[in-house]
Each structure stands twice: as structure tokens, then as C-alpha cells.
Length: 612
Image (cartoon, rainbow, N blue to C red; front, top):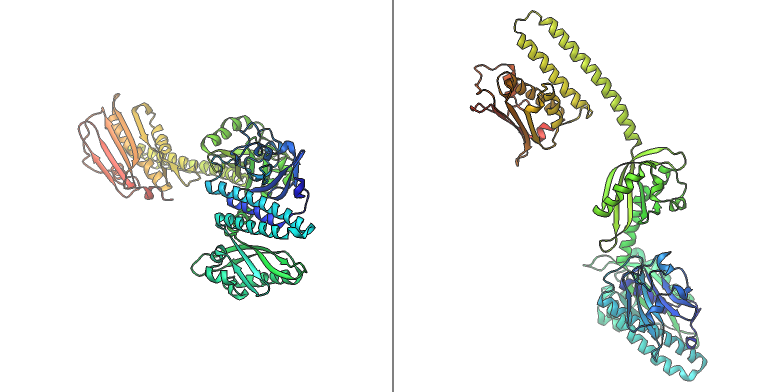
């Protein structure tokens, strides 16, 4: 290692370019050039990793030096060599590793070019990625050899030619690596001719003719498809390099006819002669469109999350909270992001609810991937219990494994308060309606006292009672809807003959008008069955079934059995007219009188019975 004189040296573009290439080609969060010595591993170049070195005890790369070829560990938590490594069990929680050995010309391994990620990768690297990583590793060694050669050349002029040879070899290997990547082009601006020469990959990136790019282009020609708004920034960076020798780095857009908008990143530097004159301006161009799209999407999602009116949070599988948005922190009384990071999922809930949550909610997420329902948050400072609609999902990695929990919860305090107020109003309305119906019944009783047809008077009273039952059911749903089965149960309960009915049907929501119509219809059918049909003896039975057919119609079937043979009525009274009006008061009824018992089929469009 001492012969390279590289430990603890400042960053250099040649090595920085390689780790950026490795990260992009392998689609990982981190790439390192790691040099391993007795007590530490030091990173000559790094991207996605803060520390410049770590103790040897934390080195995964040291394992790569013990074998030939690539070392790929799909999940560091499952490998006995690395599962207790503090970089795996603690921050930054690395999970995936792939490293290509850095070997000297005599076969001695001195480190690795490695890529890391925070999520496991069961499939490791693709063949293309693995081959490219090894080529880039060889390029690292070539750069190190070149660096050493240049240092030796500066110390001894007689080694100048050997250094140039290594440079040519390095360029050749770099071209091989760049060709494998498919996203990088090289360019070389010759100061004397003021022409820019680009390789085939550069020409492809810029939508230019490869032959013309190789022969040399003027600044205007190679910038033909640069977006006009970006030209000023690009030319300013070029001028700064030519006039001040500044390192060149700039991002800009290309709008090539017939192609989608493309982002490129250009990096380069001026190369000087021995006497300090500018000789050539060389560098690389990388297609960063995918990265830009990802960054834009990430920023957009971050704004949505931060500006959301809901509680949004992320927790690790052990229950420790990783992040909560500002709205969520305000809801539960947390002062800042760091205070949220010191909490666990259980801290947010009413302690009385936690056993149920632990037993049902989290297992449901592990099993089904999600759970939704009403729970109660606890305010951290005041202890206030806050009703929320709690929606939790399991966040998965590239495979099927759940790696974290994400939660979106809506504050339901206003909604619950409104429901309480509505309940009070409904109770008052119900009380007044019952009083009104009782008054109507009393007036009717007094008015009809002298009527000789007592059956008609009694039928009128019972119809009022059926209407009252329907009103009561509707009030349970704020007068907006009622469930079919609720209406059936409420009406038939008035006859106190539940064992004589068999009921079957799906849960269907009815609008207010259909609820009243159905209540009166069922009342008339049951009354007729009690007087003349299956309920007039001790053994008769009524089967009531409802369903939705393929035409989107609600079908209700009333079938009597075990009673006297039915007779079709000679005249149509009010009750008969109610029955013939059907489910919505507009018809759709079929009445049959076979010897075994009266049968009726009622139908109505579903959208009609659900109208408000």
C-alpha cells in the first residue's frame, strides 16, 4: 500500500467518477473504493456514505480479500460473517454488499470497489452489473497505477513514457467499462483547434452524427440540442474552466427531435502542458434522466406528505418510529421530528386499546399487507383521547418482505362531534314524529269512532304503525338510507310471529322513499297472510327472499305455504292497491294464487330503490 502513497489523500475526480458509475450501474444507494490496512479501512472515494474510514472490525470488504472473484452477500443480516457487524445492526443499517477485489499487478488484494444498499437483494447483481463492477475495479487499479506512475514521473523524468503508456491502457479499459455501462460518453476539447471530439456514446447522448463527433465539433455544433434556458449556465461553467482553471461540472437538458427530454451531467477538467499552458479540456457526459425524474417525484411526494391534513408516519418492524409529518406531530402533541423519532407505535395509543392492536392490527398487516379501522390516539402532553380512522400498510422491499410500516390516520374529532349532535337531533325528531303519529292515531280513533267497519279502522292504525317503524329505521341512518334486512325485521316484529318466517337476502341499502314503500308493502302482505293465508292457522309458513339480478334489479319474493288455498280477491281495496304498487310505488309486481299458497314477485331497478 505504501508504494501507492494514496492513504489519507484528498478526493480525486477519476476515482469519484468510478464510484458514481458503479452506483448508477448497480442501482444501489452507496459505492465505495475501500482500501484495507491493518487497523482500518479507508475510502479513497465514496458516494452515499458519510464516514471517510471505519475500524477494521466494521469492514465487510476484508471478507472479500479472503477469496477470489466477486463477493456478493444478498442479505448481510443472514450471513454469519456480517450479521453482528455494527454497520448492519446499527446506522446506516446496510443490508446488501457486492465487492470486487482491487489487486496489484502481482495479485495482492489491497481493497475493493464495492456497492452497498439498505435493502436486501436476493438476486444479487445481474451478469451485466457484475462484469461491469469487476471492470471498474480493474479501472480503479489502473487509476492507482497511473497515479503512482505520474508521481514517479514527477520525481524522475525518465519514467514519463511509461506513465503515458499506462494512461493509454487506462483509457482503453475505461472505454470498455463505459461501453458496458451504456450511459456515459467521453469528450475531449482540444484547445489548439478549438474543436470538441466525442466518442460514439457521447454522440448518441447528444443526438449527433458519430463520425462528425469523432472528427471534431465547434461549440455551437455540439450544443445544438441544448435547451435554450440552460445554455447560459453551461457556457458560464465552460468560461470559468478556460479562464480560471476551475473544475467543470454542470447539469443541463437536451431536446433532441423525436426523443424525450434528456438530462445530462458533464464533468471535466483542464489538462495543462509542462509549462502551464492549457492543452485539452476533457471529461465525461452521463445520462441522468432517470435520476432527475426520480428526484422530481420524490420532491413531489414529499410536498404532498408534508402538506397533507392527515397524520402520516413510518415505523420500523420493531415498532420504533422513524418519521412523522408535521400535521401528525401537531395532532398528538409532539414538538419536532426528533421527539417523534424517540417514540414507538405503542406510545400513540390509549393503553387500554394496545392489547387488541397488538393481537389483531399488526398481525393483519403482516398477513394481508394492510388494516383499516377506527382507533384512538393519545395526546402526549394533555392525555386527550383522539378518535382517528387508522390506515396502516406494510411497506415492502423489491421482493415480498415487509420492511416497515406506513400509517395514514384521519382526525375524526369533528366528525364524531357532528355525529353526536346529529344523534341528539334524530332522537328529538323521532320523539316528535312519534308524538305526531300518536296524535294522528288519536284523532283518527275519535273521528272514526262511529264507523261500523272496525276492520278498516284497525287496518288504518296498523298502517300508521308500519310507517312509524319505517321512520324509526330511517332515523338510525340520519334519514338518508336504511338496510333492507332492518326494514324487514322492524315491520315483521309487529306481528310477533318470527318463527313463522324464513328470511334470506344480501345486505342492500334502500333510499327513504323505498323504505316507506317496502314497510307498507310488507305490512299489507303480512296482514293478508294473517287474515286469509299461511299465518291464519298454526302450521303455515312464509318464505321471504330478496336479491339483485343480472339486470341490476332488486327482486323480492314472498311465498306462502301450509295455509288455506288462496283465492284471488273479487275487488281491489286500498291494501290490494298498495301491494300492486310494488317496491317503489310504480308497479313491478306479479301476484299468483296456486293451491299450495299465495306467491308474489316484486321488482324495481336498484338505482330507483336507492334514490335519496
